[in-house]
Image 1: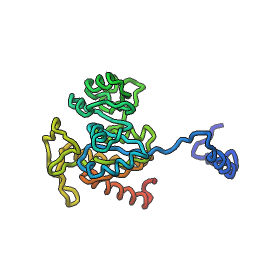
Image 2: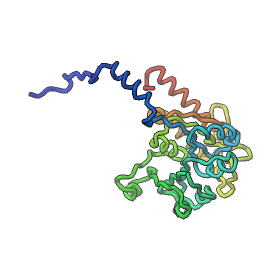
Image 3: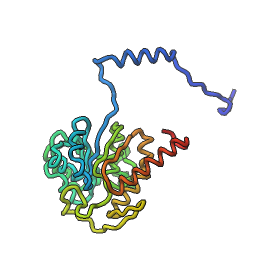
Length: 269
């Protein structure tokens, strides 16, 4: 006998009364001899100029959460905050990437994209650093080289956005972002000296009545962040952006827009 699926009504049930579930939870959560799988909190530090405004906050927060960073924020954290990062993410394909990390540190996990210039990978390995390769989506040829077992992060246009993807995949569920400005200040394009890689395509971007100076790449990052923000929220990542600049301004709007959609019932919280 065949039955059309549309005529079947599935009823969800439990194999015990809900009171048994509650009692079991209460008993097991009171144990101190078994570690619990807990939500992880972290900060992500990028190299935007506004990071220098929050050195004390970064120092304080670093006592209680993981510290992830990208590119030259690795050395900036050590020099300005006295903070050893937990994880440093890099993905620059040019030799300039080797200048981002003056001295590899023990106890830091270096998450290096497979597209990164090999000079940095070689130096990290020579120093005995903890190195893990990850793979950014690129094209079919690259994916064939990576192999069928490789985990490839979703399309994103900057190392900062890929870092957020890696944090999500690693189990981080609350992240506070510092220094991801996506714009310049009058006398600074980074929180640290970046004379070896000066931006050459600085443009004026107008957003909500404010003017931001940024490269096309940085403005594209702010736009991509705004579009990816709902995806991160649905993946369980809660994000707080600290600082000023084009990306923080666009994040504030993305956060408000998503809250309105949730209120109207158009998307799930």
